[in-house]
Image 1 (cartoon, helix red, strand yellow):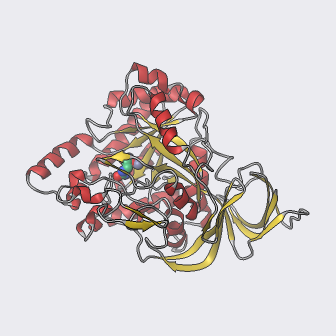
Image 2 (cartoon, rainbow, N blue to C red):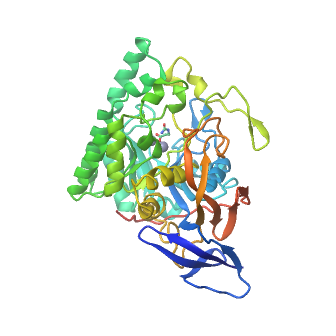
Length: 473
Ligand code: URP
Ligand code: ZN
Ligand code: ZN
């Protein structure tokens, strides 16, 4: 059925303008002023902002970790994402089985029946040999996966050595796959953690103190150098330290195809949170840093050194021993309390899939740090381009999927765990004011969020096959 979103102010990555949008079936048919289609359903967007649905390139749903799992699965996480205006997300397949094919099949089993927004996968490469290399080359054509993630930390668990990263980058390059990097200094972390535990320094703050920023800074430069030598593109995930931005800027000035992503938690918070009450609720890897890091990351976001804001959504309960009422049912999932008295056992990760757009709208655009068009670029268009989803996703042009968020810029609320839909018992932005929220969200033309009401369904999200070749921004 035809729909028209009428009288709204459209915000794209480059322009803000008045226009109507004609949706035919699942796609945008036309964008123009004064559209009128006999029999079409009209959605009046007078006084509203109309933007492409968000693309979150970095989430971890139902991820097994430290004897528990991240507490949002592919249904609860996707649903929460949609309430926050996000209509596409990409999560990471762990390399746990003998073959990548088995890993991917296992992840489809978790995700496909539950998916409520459109989604795709990145493949973690945490073990590398000739067999893995051969399978990696098939990922785009066989599995629709055109990005891998490698790690310079989590020694003996997820880390590849530099030679392995270099080899993986070359295979990825030849297969048209983008290499993503978790940048931390694994060897130093091992030493510091062992020393801290031996001397009884086991608080949440000690988690951060054993993962110094210099390790991340050095890892960004080293991986950029490896990418240069492999003649491969590189994408640094969850950038958190000022020096990382400096290294990324340097790499880009040398003409390297290196890109970067940061997350709201690294823009708004510092490691002081770890020293406070409920410090475990702020434990993530890489850790929160200092004020000057927040500021330098904002600069990177503003001047284009950083191209993407993702969430690294990897939520846990603060107190998984205590049930909460979630969507009318009692739920408790073991979480941060597992690390009581020992930071090495705290499952690392933070909630954020729903918060990203409202927070960045109010506290990024609203504070003049970024423009509305940068907001769309960083949160939708750029990730869609980099990860091979554009122009299907991340844009409002004819032919694109009708993934659209209608924002009411006049809404003003006190935000927090009660307003949010993520399956956890706390919220990073408790008590923060939000001015402007998505009120209607369309996924491929279907109105899945309608003024606080959920119309989506498990299984309603499509798996997005991505082809070889990535856009470098
Ligand atoms: O602490 C975090 N970020 N957990 C998720 C896994 C990762 O390294 O991104
Ligand atoms: Zn990571
Ligand atoms: Zn992550």
